[in-house]
Structures are given as structure tokens and as C-alpha cells.
Image (tube, rainbow, N blue to C red; front, side, top):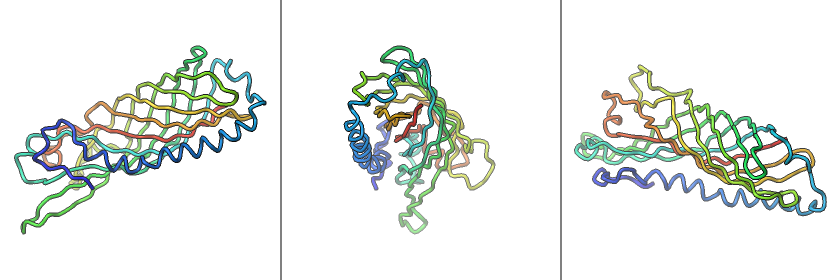
Length: 259
């Protein structure tokens, strides 16, 4: 676990939240490689047969999405964090979650599509805080925030030429999220931080399409970065006085089944 010293918070964003996320992400290249090898072998075996030959001429098509996400927060601290001893360190780590959704794809030209991919994303984020008790001993506390996002991204999909039954693509777009589990208006006394329900941000990603006789199998890796301050300020919460700005960051590994 990498901590953040309260004496080093002049940097606008902390970096301690990144290593736990990257620890999870070290498995991503291997997962994608295995998927691509399995379906690439099948595509190679069938390279003389062009599956779904008329699919690229469709004006639009639909699909379903399921996947796994790793979500965390980026934190910017207040001056109070450096001047007071309430918290010695504060950092965050990611927790695995999952996505379920639908997809609608509109063909703009041979190399660019417009894609809408609404889904429900179940995500957890953890806070790790070090404080001192009355005896001067360090106390480590871990608290988790659960989120249920109505995730609504609108993306441009940049496609390569089709190579037999395979192609790759890149993504660039924006998103609008609604956290159905947000606690900004909660009156519970045991809340350790409050978060707002709405967020906007940007997304980038890459993916691969494997054409089968009746459907397209498309694994995808995407980074989703929020831009709004998700913290709802409450002066009665000590952690709220130490944190000035929190934004969401999510890495998503998805599987699209397209028709």
C-alpha cells in the first residue's frame, strides 16, 4: 500500500491511488491476449470463408455488452490537510465491479461509426485513512463506497480495414453518469464522505472484432475519466474538510456481442 504524506500535498493530484489500480490492470494484457489468440486462431482457420459479408453495409445494428470494471478516485486535498493532524495519510484503491448494457451502432462511413452504449455499472471504491488515537498510536481505517452508475457514453468508433474475419478499432467520446447510490442528500450520521449523483467525462479505448457466422465477438479495453467534483461538501464530516476535489477513474474490460 502506498500512502500519501500530508506534507506532500502541494501536488494538485495524488498518485497513491494509481498503484492499486495498476496492480489489478497488470492482468489485462494477458486476458486480452488469450481472447485474441483463441478467436484469432478460429478466424485464421476460416480465413477463406468471409463471415457476415454484408454486415459492413448495414446503416445500423445493435448488440449487448457485459464486462468488468476497476474503479477508483483521484484526490486533490485542501490546505487543511497539511495544517492539521486529523489525518496522517489518505489514499484510495480500486475494487472490481461489473457492467451490463446494450449497444446501438450507427454507420457514418466505411471507417467511422457513432456508438451509444448505455449500461449499468456496479463499482466499488475504497478509502484508506491513517489517524492517531489519544495514545499517539497510528490507526488504519478502510471504508468502501458502493456506486451503481447509469452509464451513458456516446463514442466515435474509428475502424481499420477488415482483414478477412478480423478488424481492430479505437474509441473516443464523452459520457454522462448518474450514480443511483449517491448519498449527497443522506442524513445518516455515520456517513464518512458524501458524493454527488451526476458526472460527465471522456473515454478512450481500443477493441477487436472477430466475425463469426452469426455474430461479432468484440473484446474491448476502455479508460473512463470523470471531470466533475464528485464530493458533496459537508463540514460536519472530517474527511470532507481534508478533501477539496475527487474525480472518478474507471478501467473497463468489455465483451460486445454484435448482430
